[in-house]
Length: 397
Image 1: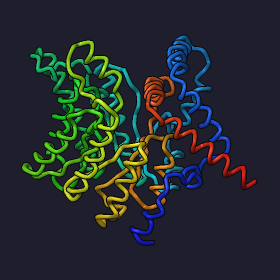
Image 2 (image 1 turned 45 degrees about the vertical axis):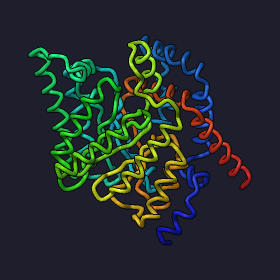
Image 3 (image 1 turned 90 degrees about the vertical axis):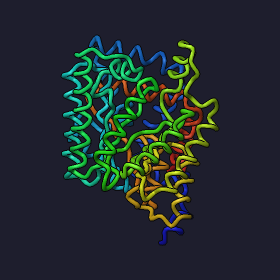
Image 4 (image 1 turned 90 degrees about the horizontal axis):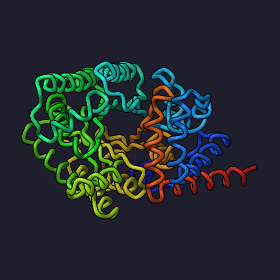
């Protein structure tokens, strides 16, 4: 089958391919989870109750492990993710191991997070199903310190030393990935620390992306200024002679960003409409395709239209589906219709696979649930695909 032919049959409504590795029991669990996530009221009530239950030691970890955790996480340890990694691999989908312990702020926890990310690099050396490593800057340094640097406030001597340790941890991770020839994603965060994260990412790219894209920064296109940032960073990369690594997403902190802007009296960095976000996202795809030999693109999206745009644009330009500079990415447990249909057509696809102890990963899971409950249409789309596949299977019996 030629590249052109395989794209012409790409169909994100093909639930047989999307759920090929899911049992009837798996589908039933996913159905009820997405029904629950669709209720923003239930999520708002359930989050504090679950946190309280975990904190006082009520025996609910088993329930969580077999429901929401099993749907969206790979395991409690790197080794514990092996089965989930292999399952994805059967569908020609690779894995991004994402250590998702959030909210712990101490030098010891920052060192531990760095060491855990380095352990994923070591694991990736011997497992070709790991396509990227990833870290959040606030996993290796204090949020308020990044905010102070972002605001260009003068640091104390202790803070200057603390920031140097943050930079060293980032560099240790990026250097290890460079030496292992493993790509690494630097996740985006809130706007009032993002300029500093962008500076860090640019420095790491300039240092380690001389031969190929290894380090990838993240561009949140729900911000009205990020398409311009992407283009400016590419211009800088051209002048300094390095490859740009660009993970493009829409974004995950919209409500927080708007609330903070209103509270502090500045213009919100968020696009005024979803259509504007979609337009900038798709324009970012086209810009990266225009410069695909010098940009490593990861299109992180659950959006059918943007995914199809990129797939068809690659065919239009005769870019091989498995070109090393182009990846699609989705979160584990979501948008399997995109991941596995793209994988079946031989595109490069990766799933973000969160892992970590159940209790420690709960803040991440709750944040994702809240994002999904406020994302127009996403949970409805997931539910409609699950129902369609359940009906297809029933018709075969």
